[in-house]
Image (cartoon, rainbow, N blue to C red; front, side, top):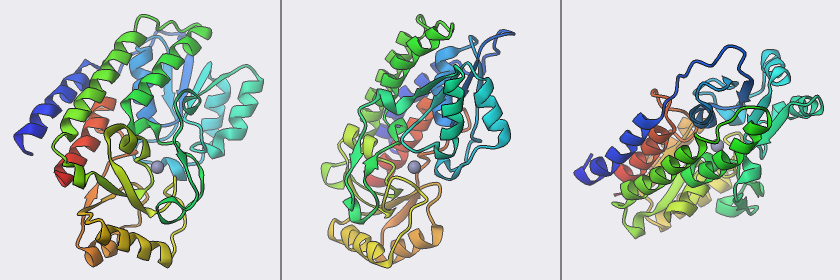
Length: 296
Ligand SMILES: [Zn+2]
């Protein structure tokens, strides 16, 4: 890692250390259920020890390929408040969420509180149209969610009014630190090819262009045709893309073949998985560093 990235990354390391995490809730604290770990890390930071937090998906699970267990559904039914992503990420849980809401469980969908990125059909060589669920790669979209979640928590008796502004400020600092890490990437190299179309919010926020995805579409579970792969290869060659970022759920054989045929390097992008320290700041820092190091 060159000194400029390392210096910029230092700010993110400090932000990660500022996040509490691992708090032990008061006995009798209300139960808050969050569906996936990256969002769970931020909610944990917001509630501290004022709620008993449960995260349904295991870390490292592909959220696009997850279905709830009977135990998960029971946890949702018994929760005071459920924090879900929305936009199809928890498709298998929707029926349980509707049932729980009818019985008074507050269901908070994060993507109801961000400016949703819309994907046009056929964009980047294929896939379906729709609202993009991957807001979590944008710290400022995450800040919008925190500021909307605080009053929802207050509504079920979990008062975080003193914690929300500090967390919102740390997320704004994280945005600035991310911009600093990415500053080494020249304009002409600000082009992303990823496993599926997960980086749209990040690209819009930090001035990158999405050239295409191995699986064109908003989920890792989409189909990919020979024609779409040929179009992706052509786009990589025409635009001089040097790196393909592979993600959770990306078929390794396909991505390696495209790398061989185009000469592009294949680099892992941890876009759906929380790092070992459980910190959202580290999560964003690892993504920014992977991109800055590969494209500088
Ligand atoms: Zn995804």
